[in-house]
Length: 142
Image (cartoon, rainbow, N blue to C red; front, side, top):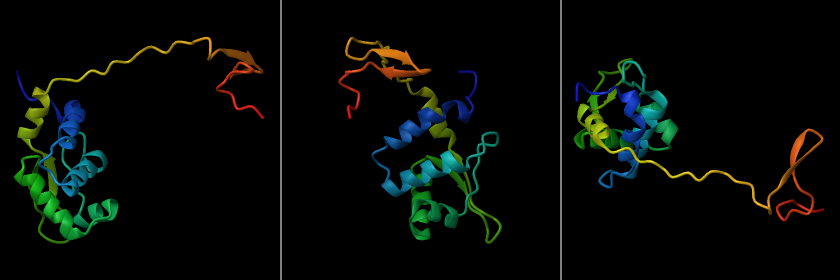
């Protein structure tokens, strides 16, 4: 591999691995999902929400948020640089190790079946709208 891919390219795989990590508490998981989906800057790959902001959004106490952030740091999901007082929020970024794990994970493909019309569900044009045929079992009869 020539270099590590940007996090924005691996975000979905990273989130999938995080959500399936059985070693994380529910609080840590919800804090991480909130930080990544709501506050992460796509260019710098950093986020700066305060503990209070996270607590208000997730419905948890500030102390629970502090424990969850510590857990995410210890388990290698985030690199955390703590701020020093008011106006100096803690900085979060996905750890290099967790990004590397996400880049090495195989991409899962979902099997999608194409939509086909069957005899039971026929649509006809009436009045500029697509409507189920009269007498169709999926139509609400009044």
